[in-house]
Image (cartoon, rainbow, N blue to C red; front, side, top):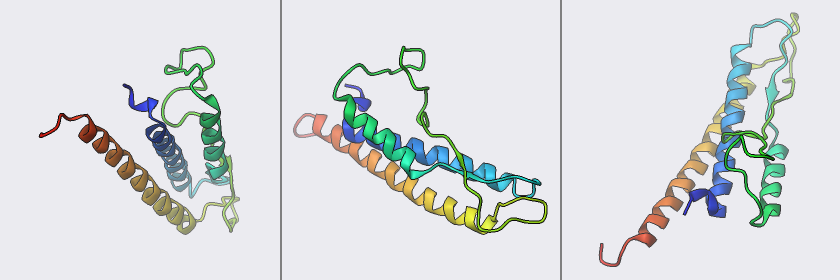
Length: 137
């Protein structure tokens, strides 16, 4: 049995992918904090919700497990998550609208949610392992 065949684990993997893509985007924003004319991006929560809604509709149909399969949306845990321009609250004279404090708040919130999803994933795997063990071990 593949862990992706279990809905809870598949949902948690999607959540990890979302937070991974979001962290990458936030790190890019911070790296470009002094780049003239740079507009920060973020991965919206609605993208994650759309991916989850798509998983619920599949209902055991044909699944693509490799990016080379027909109908694949791309590979990796972050497939389907694309950054969108989201200017912060202030814009400097050089046109840069990255506010480091706002990006750090987003990064910290994202990290906590990633760690929560990772913990739930690990605990779910441990429960499966415990259930698969023979009695008395």
